[in-house]
Every structure is written in structure tokens, then in C-alpha cells.
Length: 116
Length: 115
Image (tube, rainbow over all chains, first blue to last red; front, side, top):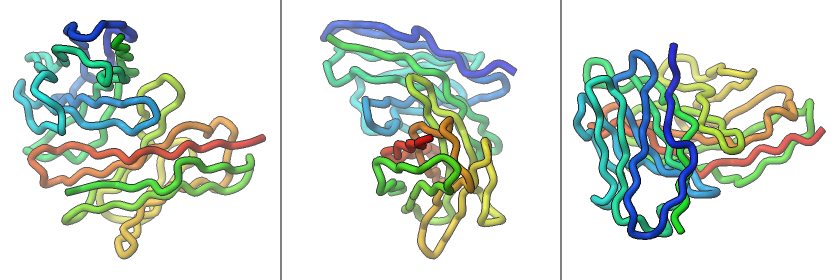
């Protein structure tokens, strides 16, 4: 069983740039969620993807966008980077059955983004 | 709106003593509750969950949690702490009937076990 993998593990960008983070979900999982974890805080829900469509979004601006591919892998894109976007970005996969999510999330190790 | 609260930023316990990390929740309907642990510079690892049934849930690494509906609490417990239990612990809640199906995390409690 392959776990959730994320890339890159670390990256540094400057304000105004764009970044793409990638995630491969755990084998057999069809739902991907993205979280932002600022230093010293709990993870904040960005959005979730199911069947290649956004299925719920947290309080993040439109410059945060995503994709889910037919193999259930996913990308998080952030445009016009700001200093406050510096954080650990976590991808989590889960299995959705019959329209309901009852299971836990399985997290990757995260991508640490630093915006200078 | 669903939420969880972890009232303690840090909990300090001597090795071998019992530990409790507190969590209270607010959600309409029956909650799905979770505990996760995060080690430094790592992602979150699932410890245990409550969906329905027995109020005492057993999880990984000897941890357990007690669901108390009247007090809207889901405290994490372990009978005998280990130094290796030192980490950041997050309580989380999901509304199973929300179309968003998102899990909401608390602010975290840092558990420090001294030898």
C-alpha cells in the first residue's frame, strides 16, 4: 500500500510569484484535501477534491486553486504569493463511499513553502 | 458551524504517569471525532476516531479517548506516558452530513513527557 506523497518537500519563492505543489494520494483513495498549517497553528482547510471537482472550500481567496486528476493525484496552485502564505502545506487523502465521508484522513509529510 | 477547542496549549507529564489531553467540540448532529499526532517537521498521523458505538475508543500507541456527549468532550488519554509520546496533538471533527465533508482541526496541544 502506497502512502500519500508530496513534492517538493521544501521550496522558497518571492512575493508575487506562483507555486504548484503536488500530491499523490494513497492507493484506493478517491478524495484529496489540502490544508495550510502556519507555524504554531492547527491545519486550516483549503479545499477538497472528489471526482476531479472541488467539493468544499475553506476561507481562502481564489488565488488558491487546485486540480484533481483521473488517477486521484492532485495539485495545489497559489498565485501572487504573499508573505503570509509561508506555511506547511499538507495533502490528505481519504475514501468517500456512497456520498459520505466516514473515514479518517491520511496525510503526506507536507511541502514547506517560504515566501520572501 | 462545527468546531473543536483544545483549551491547553501545553501539557507536561512525568514518564510513567497517566496523561490527558482535553478537547471539546461543537457540531450539529452526531459528530465524527478524531485525534491526530504530529512529530516535528512531519505530517499528521491518525491515532483514533469515534464514529458511533462504545464511548471509549482505543487507538494507536496505547492511546484511548472517551466520547462524552453531555459534556461535548473527547479527551485523549494514556495510562502510562512515554518520553516518545512527546509531540503535538490535534483534535478534529467532521460533520458527516456536510456537503463539504471537511475535517476541522483544533489549535493543537503540545505534550511534553519528562524522564
